[in-house]
Image (cartoon, rainbow, N blue to C red; front, side, top):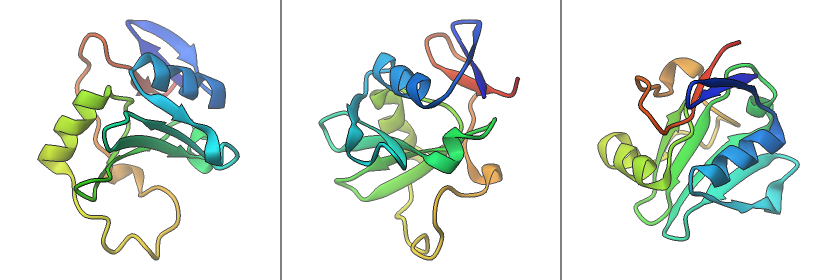
Length: 124
């Protein structure tokens, strides 16, 4: 998979996703490293990507507000504050997701228009 950061194209894999999470202000939680890459902010927010997603050309990331029990699926890696803002605007309870394993169809994930300072994923 490839992505664009500050106008430069990069190839992305597991380690690159971890690095992009940390560069965007997330702390890493390696407790499920074989299955998930998890970033957290220490204030009730997380961003994660499932293994089957990081192995694709167009991954989907889940942002989660653990205190308000909201989730939102995105196509970009956001800073914790940007994720908080998106969850406030678009976050939904994860109801009905129990029967679905892994990420939702890509058509349901949010992708914004490029802004300076945010990592935007693009197909190579």
